[in-house]
Length: 381
Ligand code: SAH
Image (tube, rainbow, N blue to C red; front, top):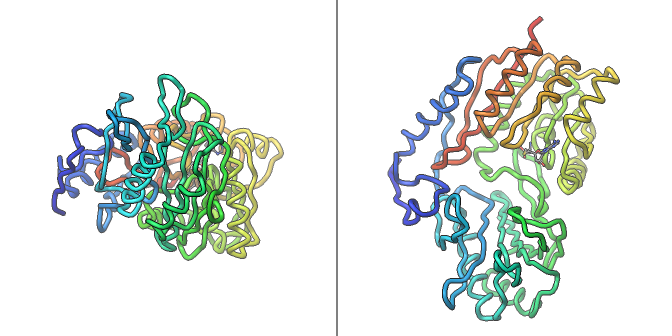
C-alpha cells in the first residue's frame, strides 16, 4: 500500500499517516497486541483494511476563531490549540465537505463561535455520522445554549448546498466539559437519527449512541466474534456493553436467547427499536451498569452459556469478571479496543478459571495506534 503523506501529520497527532507503510503498521500492531496479551494466548495476524483511507463514518470537528476567520479542526495532541483540518485522509470525504460549508455558514450568518476560556459564544462542535451502506448522513451542531439565531435559514442553506444530508440535529452542551455532546438533542430537519446496514441487519443510530467508526471492518470483527462464540442455537448469551445491540443481534439467529446490557439509555432505546425493526424476538435489552447487573444475575443464580463483552477503552472491572466467574459461562468472547486493558482483564479472568485461547486483531483504526481485537476464553473444567 502506498504511503500518503498528510499535511497535518505533525500537528494533529491523531494518526501517523505517511510515517510507515500500511503493511508495516499492521506488523507493528500485532507486536503491540502480543506485548500485552502474548503471555496468555496465541495472537493471529492483524486483519487489515482493503482500502485504509476515508474509512471513518463518524467525523468530529471543534469550531474556533483565527483572527477574523472561523475555523474547524481538531485539538493538537495534549493541547487546546485548534489545528484547522480540511480533507483528512482517514475521515469520510463527504463529511469533510459538509464541515467546510458549515464553517462558511457560521461566518456568513455571523454566529458566535464558543470560546472555552470565557464560556461565551454559541457554536461549539460539529459531528457527522454517515451510514456507509444507506448513505444517510446526520449532521449534529453542538451549541452552548438552546437559542440558535437564523436557525431556519441556516438549515435550509445547508440542505441546499448538501442535499445528501438526511437529518440535522441541534445538540445542546452548556457544560464546561471535554465531552463533545450534551444530553439534549433537537431535530432541526429529518428524524434525528440515521440508519445503517451491518451483517444484513438494519440499525438506527442516534447522536449519542455508540456505533463503530469503521463499518467495513466492523463486519470482519463481528464475524470473528460470532465464530469464536461457536453457537449451536440453544445458548443463553449475554451481550455486555452492547451499545445499540449490534453484536447481540448479529448472533441472535444462532442463539437460544440474548440479553444486551448497556448503560447509555439512548443506545438502549435504539437497541430496542433495532430488534423490532429486524423482527428479532429472542433478544431483550436492559439499561444498566454491566458490572452491577451481572453481579445481581450471579447472586440470583441465573444460567448463562456465553458472555460476549465489548467494553470501552478503559476495559472492564474486576467485579464484572468475578460476576462472570460466578455465572460460569462456558465461553467468553472479549471484543477489545485496547490491548493494554485487555491484558489486565485477562489476568483477572485467569483467577476466575478462564483460559485465553486465541486472539484475532482487526484493524479498525488504520494509521492510528489503536487496535481492536477479539479474544476467546474458555472455562477450564
Ligand atoms: N458492542 C457495541 C458497543 C461497544 S462500545 C458495538 O460494537 O457497537 C462500549 C459501550 O459500553 C458503549 O455503548 C458504552 O455506553 C457502554 N458502557 C460503558 N460503560 C458501561 C457500563 N459500566 N455498563 C454497561 N455499558 C457500559
